[in-house]
Length: 206
Image 1 (cartoon, rainbow, N blue to C red):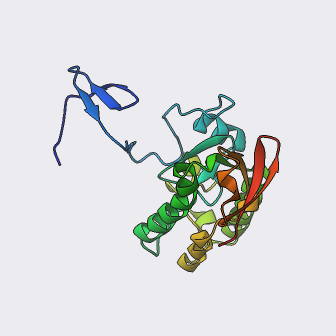
Image 2: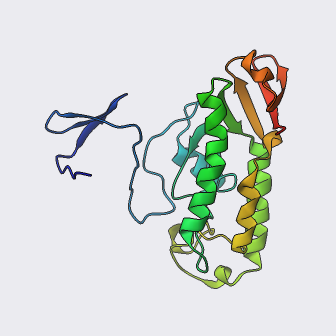
């Protein structure tokens, strides 16, 4: 590992360009945005042009499906809404969510699927459950970074026991819209894909 303090001028397809003009190639870029948990400053836009922060503004606070995916924006983010805890390791939840994400990456790399997008219905249902659990918690009496602006909706803390994170072991495929990249490969035995035009619902059958 080497440290480079030149600063970033721009991001390119291969990696990034430093302020000194050097081109550094990377497979993965990890954004460290500091200790502001209720804002998403990076202007990442979804297929309809809406940024992550614009989605949060409409919702009234940061939220996501299982703290991981956002309707209309086909990216995952970290730190993730309502995933921190004060009683178990954040590494535990991070590792489980990474394993969850990899279940989506594999069919994309194999050329079966071009994209996954969680539905608004599934996201709203999940976040209502989370907020209902928080209403019965001590966190409602706290003023802290857990809350938007210090005293708004709770967008950082997870209200349940760590064992609930085992629900990420297998995605609920009906909660996602899927764009098929190759309809011939989509007939692979591991996938039961019901096509409807250019999009489909997918169910993992292994």
